[in-house]
Length: 285
Figure 1 (cartoon, rainbow, N blue to C red):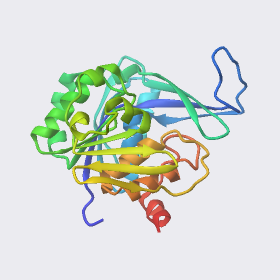
Figure 2: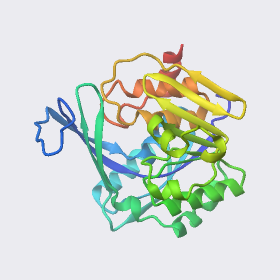
Figure 3: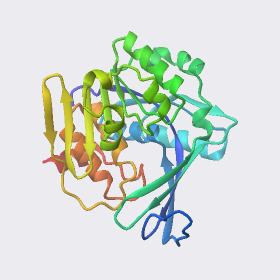
Figure 4: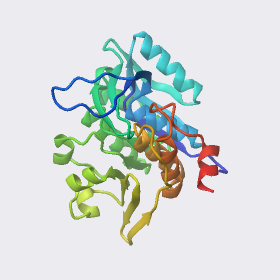
C-alpha cells in the first residue's frame, strides 16, 4: 500500500466478557460456562483496530470512563498505533458487553452502553477538524444516533467518504435515516432497511450485504456483484462483521474484507482475533 488511508472511527468502546457455553441459553435456562475471556471490544473500537491492523492510519472518537478499564483501553489503542485524542473520559463507567458463545461459534450479546452514551453532539463538533481531514469516516450505532448523524454530516460537507454499519439496528435509525456512501449490513438488517434492496431507499451509493458463509453482495447503480468468502470452521464469530467493516474501510476491496472477517472467526475474542494486513494478504493468496 503506497499511502495508507486515513480513517476516523466514531463509535463505541466496551469491555467484553465472553462466556463459552454448549449452546445459547433459552429464556429461563441456566447453563454452566466452560470458560471466560475478558478483552476489549465495542463495535467502534473493533472496527478501528481492524482498520489499523489492515494498514490504515486510524483515529478513534468515542468515550470511556475515568475507571481503570478506560485508562487501560486508551493505552491499548495507542499500542495499536491509533490516535486517541478524540477518546473522551466520563464519570459514567466504561461500556461493557456480556457475550455467550456456543460450540458452533455463534453468539448472543447483552451490551451495557455506559460511557458510550455520554458522548454528545457538542463533543463531535469539537472533533470536526479531525473528521474533515480524513479519507473516510466509519460509523456504527452503539453511540447516540444524533452523534452519529452529526459526524456523518460533517464528513459529507467536507467530501469525506462515509461508511455506516447500522448495528445494532434501531427503530430511531429506521425512522430517521441519513445519507452515506457505503452501507454495510447483514441479511436481517438489509431486510429491515430496504426489503427491495433499493439504493435510494437505503440512502447510499453502495450497499454491502454480508451473509456469513454465503457470498457477500455488493449493490451499486451498475448492478449486483457476489464475492464468495473463504471457507473456514468458526471458533467465535464475535467481531467478524466489525473486522470486515474496518478492513473494507481501508482497502475498498470486498475480497480482502471477506478474508479478514473469516480469519477473525478462528480465534476467541473480538479484538484478539483481528488479523494483521500480512495475515490477510497471505490468506487471500
